[in-house]
Each structure stands twice: as C-alpha cells, then as structure tokens.
Image (cartoon, rainbow, N blue to C red; front, side):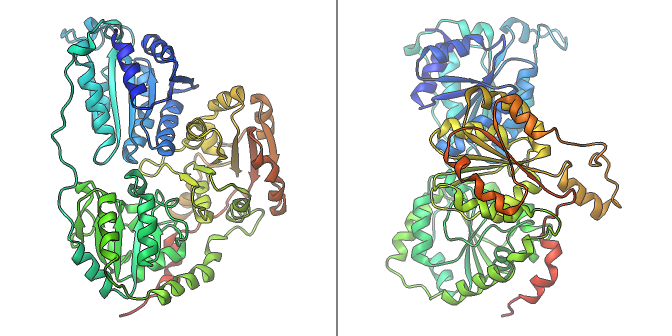
Length: 558
C-alpha cells in the first residue's frame, strides 16, 4: 500500500464522504486514491478558499471531520483564510497540502527555494492551527493522521494541517508495521460542584443562560434542550449559538437583539455554556454588559476568567456538565421564573422596532422575517459577513432542526457562498439558503460555477446596496463620511440577473415586501436561484451603542 492509499482509507474509516479541493500537480496522487476508494467524492472548487469554507461548513452540518485539499505553493496559501476561520470558530477540519519533492524541501543550503512551488506552509500554519506537520518519513503517516484527527476533534475542536511531499505520497508502506499515536492530554478536569450551581440558581431572581456554539460542538444540543425546559431559565445566545434552542430570546452582543441585551444587563445570574465572551459579545467594557454573578462552563481552560476574573469556572465537557445538572435538578426545586420571562417577552415586543431602521425602500429585517415562515424545519441558513449577517440574525427565529452558520471569530467576507455548497453536499435533501451582501458575494463569486454545473439547489439571497454597507456606516460615524472604497464610483455590483443567467441559475427580484410570498415555490424546489433584494445605499443596522437611552430606562435596580 502507498501513503496516499493509506490516507484515503483513514478518511473512509472516519466516515468522510466528501473532500473539497482544487486540483494541482502535488495532489494528483492523493485525489486519485481518494476517488479509487469508491466512498469519497472529490468536489472540485474554483478557488482553494472556497474549498476551505466548504470543508468548514460540511463539518458544522455533519458533526464529522471536514476535509479540504490543495496543491503546493499558492494552492496551500489560498487555503489559509479558511483554515484560520475554522480554527477560530473551533470547527474540526483537516487540511492536506501537497508539497514539492522531499529532497528539495529538506536541503539546508540557505536558498529561499529549491524546487517549484516549494513553500514551508507548515511554519505559516502553525500559529493558526491546533496541529501542523510536514510528513517526511512514510512510516510516520499513521502517527501523523491519528494525531491530527485527535487534535482536530478532541477538547476544543479546531483546524489541523498535514503537508505531504509528492514522493512521500507514492512511497510504499506496510500498514501493520506503522506506529500509532497515543494521546496523553486530559481535557476539562476541574470537576463539577453541582450543589453550588444549584444553590446559585435557587438564590437567583433573574437567572439567564447564555448558550454558545460550544453546546453544539460538544454534541449536547438535546441535553441542553432538556436542561432549559426543566430549569425554565430564560435563554439568550451568542451568534454561533443562535440555532441551538427553539424558544430563546435572540442573540446578545453589539448588533444583538435588544431584548437579549437587556436580559443580560439585568440578570443576577448568568450561566455561560460554551461561549468565549468575545468583545463583540460583551463590548470593550465588560462591566456594562452585565452585573450578574457568572458561572462559566467551557472545555477550554484558556477562555475561563479571561474576561470576568470573578466568575465561577467549570472546566469540563459541556455534555458532562449538563447531564449532571439534569440529574441534580430532578431532585431539587427551583423558583418560578415566570415573571422574569414576562419581562423579557415585553422587552422583545416593545423594542423589536429597534431593528427596523430603513425608512427608504425595503427593510432587510422585515424581508427575512417574512421569509422565515416559508422555510422548512430542516432548512440550513448560511450567513456572510457585514450588515447582511446581522440583519438575518436579528430576524432569525429558529425552528428545532434548522441551522444557522456564521463566520464569527474571523468574520470572513466571502464565507456564505462556498459554505452553503459544503452544507448542501452534507445534507443534499435540505433547503439551503445563502444570505450575502453584494460585497461578500463577489469575493467568492467563482463558486457559482460549481453551483450551476451541478445544479445544486442553493437559494442565494443577495442584499444589494451596491456598496460595502457596514464600512460606510463606520465611515459616516468616525471618518466624516469619507467613503474611500465604498463610493458608488469605486465599488459596485454586477447585474445579478445576467450573472444568474451566465452561470445557469434562476433569478428572482424582491422589489416589495409582498413579493416575498412568491418565493414559496422557489423554496420548495431543488434548483439554484439568485434572489436579489435591492436596498437603499445607506441601509441602517442597529447596534447597542445607539440604544443607550433604552438600556438606562430599563435598568432594574436591586
């Protein structure tokens, strides 16, 4: 057996059915062996960044390892944005790069390059991955694959990279003689003081659960659902946790739902589950986010006490924590939090209007709200980055079984289109909607070729204001409306109807709110569409700093 065959069989054993990539000379052998298994389909993208985002989303939707492949040199460097994106959002992904011949890359002669597309991608990737390694000895392939898989999937998940030279891929090995990897690291071992947590819950008048993306990454969604129902504690979320729980009060943070932020401000106990409490969540001055006592549960000890030094920390696997809490709650009584629920519900109704800021033309939040009832319970929503991401998230009311995918840590424009492709290959029978702005669409617009060629039934909703809307907002707030790079004569959008026709996609235009109803048939078929939503050049997006008066007015004292 050769090394490339061994890699292919390893991925098959791990249940990987699709590998995304862009063909190149240094990976021809790997791709050949992957396809030869009869169990792995190679998906040819049109840019390696697209491949990386596909693998990221594929992992988010399947819960399994996402894999992307690229050739040496520029192919490898083109993966980097997607690698960083997956690692920052804790997505278990394996990136494999082809490399020049071993003899060229191991020469120690001081030359900047000895071969063609000879590049030390491992040194570039190490700071932004959980594990990166160059495979120069064929006999280490089992060890390297097992270690990479372990690092990608255990503890806080993330991205890993293996760089395999061309001649190493062809090298013959005896699988029975290969040494494996034995993990020694222990994750989440601080123990759980369940009685203390129960005591704090019983003493609280206004407890709140903040659910983050870690709940889904740990496979604890169902256990969490039972925990939220059994405790009857109100639930808000981070952006990455927004699709975890049906019945929550939206997402908190800089561009979050007003009611969710008011709940965080006025809570007296905040139970944080699998959330890192980033700056876009708590702001630059965390003390203004909440005055609550905080219980922070996370598998990653580096995230604990990072923002709030006085929090009660529990460094364990979330599913373990929630399971123990469910057992304890079955023997304990908690206060009735009905009035607290009513207060948050009243804020939700009273301040919903805060998100509806467009008084010229279509309001994007209203458009998404009107789309939501037309979507199936297994629909997958994929956001891009910018105003469009926040409009969709503000309008999103999850039905159990739906997913909402976001690029959060890196905030990478261009994520939505290729991520929607990854989601569609992961769940071909599901409705997949890609929400993007005209800016994000054009960053990875080349992936429309893949959608059109394969007629992947992805619905691409484009909020088109012919500019970089969030940049213009910052420029008007802080740069005296100096719209460099975001002026109509500097930035524009292609004719989307012609673009759809060029790539073999259907096209719809939403000119008025009542036109949204016409999408019912579009959402029920399995054909690709571009759905253009033209909006005003300076469409608005609410943020927490604009709502200071309302936060002060609703502050609960005592």
